[in-house]
Image (cartoon, rainbow, N blue to C red; front, side):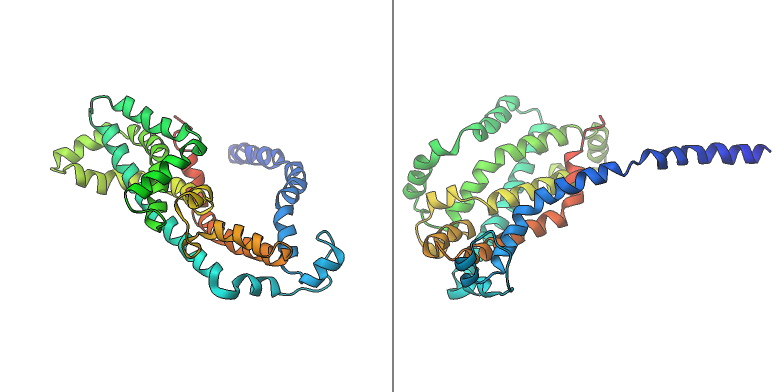
Length: 289
C-alpha cells in the first residue's frame, strides 16, 4: 500500500507537467514563424524564377517554372566569388583578431589592479556609442595617411578597432565573475599569467566567446559602410558592396540580385547554426546569479 502511494505521488508531478504543456503556444507561434520567414521565401521564389517570367507577370506572381538562371547570372564573371572570398577573409581575420585582443584586455582589466581600469573600460565602451557616420571622413584620412587605404588589411583593422570595445566589455563582465579561488590555486601550482589565461580563463570563457564570435561574424560579414569608406577597387570589395554594384548593373534582373543575396546569406546562417547552442548559453551566462 505504501509503495502504491509513493508511486502515485511520484507520477502526480509528471502528470501535472504534461498537462501544463499547452499546445496553444505552438499554434500561436505557427503564424508568427510564417510571417518571420516570408521575406526569405519571397526572395527564394524570385531567385528561382526566370527573367522573362518576372518581366511578364511581375515580382508577386507565383513561378510557372523553376530555373537556376539567376544563380548562373550571379556567378557569371567570377566577381561574386571573389567578393565572397574577400568577405570571408576579412570576417575570419576580424573575428579572430578582435576576440583575441578583447580577451587579453578583459583578462587584464578583470584580474589585475590597473590604475583607472574602470575609466579605461568606459572609454572603450563609449567608442561604440559614437555614430559611425561622423567617423567616416577621419577614418578614411587616417588610412590614407598611414598608407593602407584601399586594402583588405585596412578594412580588417577598422572592424577590429570598432568591435574591441564592446567585446571587452562583455568578456570583462564574465571574467570578473570567475571565482578567485581558482586563480589562487593556479598561482600556488606555479602557473603564470599566460598559463592561467590559456588553460583556465579561455576554456571557462568558451560560451561567451562563442556568442561573441557569432555576433562578430554577422556584423563584420554584413558590413557595408566601412567597406565603402576604406576601399576603392572593386576587386577588393566584400560581398555587400558587390551586391550594391550588382543591383546597379542589373537593376531589372531581380532574379540575379535575389540569387546573389541568398548566396551572401549562407555563411552567416551556417555560423549561427553551428554556434546556436553556445550562443544561447553565452547570452544566459550570469542570468541565474
